[in-house]
Image: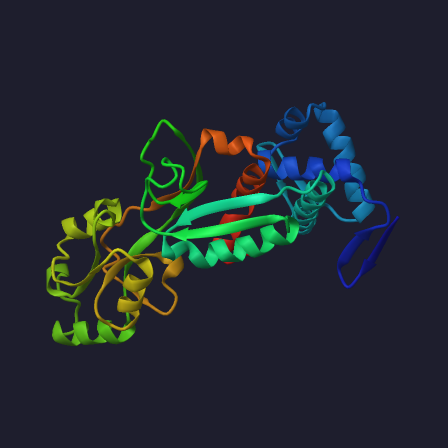
Length: 301
């Protein structure tokens, strides 16, 4: 039934039901929660997991009085099961019939790289679809019908739109290492106060974001560059023009400064019209985006 090779465990016959139970145990943290989620008795969950462990020849779940957690081997099996589930989902979409049509997605330039990476995978599954990327900071384009979906960092609460949260990004103050060295030298070994350092700010409407307001409240008033483009802001920071409020995800090659100053995080939303979700090609795009965008943005894809 089982074979082992350098610590890898494989099954000659895959127990899909057992794998589903394992994933639910990982998600809920208990046999009871897994059983409720899948509509089976706790005794059935325990019996199927035991059979799964016997098939792999290793313990996959650690049972305790306060719940259950996966072992290291169990995590490896669960990771493979999730990957297989995603791939089977894509195959199922293809077998269910191809969708076609144009999808217009609006986003700021800071999301272009992640969006284009996602689009490459989406079009491989749905070759009859055409995706148009509308790069702008206009938050009304979806409501006006000029775009089908939008990736936003603000929830404006328009009654005509449906919002779904994609992720939350952490923020901080960052600058080029050369600039930090100069500032510390000028400050006699310490960083000067926020009001004494050059700052790269954002222009309206981005200046209404909580991160921009936090920077103003913290005293960053020595503005050297102001822009409505994230990529322009990042470029200015990389060239040592000033300090800026930046997403931690975009801080590679920069140094974090003023860590004692709190910066609010930012939710990233997907916004669309109610009518858009009734169109098969847009619904396919949205479903894929919700499941695939965040891992790609985090660099896991």
